Picture 1 (tube, rainbow, N blue to C red):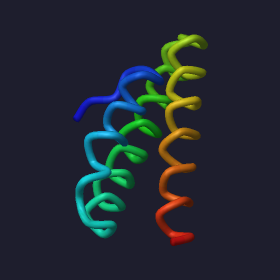
Picture 2: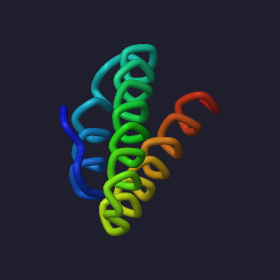
Picture 3: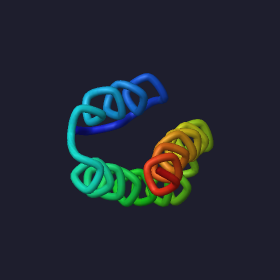
Length: 71
């Protein structure tokens, strides 16, 4: 799933919540890596809004990863 904004990040989390924890973590980590690449791309292009949006999405995904790991 391609995540481009905060709403899509939350939708992805909701979609993956029915999966087993290991599968959720795998999907979340892949999404986090993709968002990190997106952020670097936006920074390189000078798109501060895009970079900030990617950073917020990373925070949302990272919080969900922490929740699962704490269970």
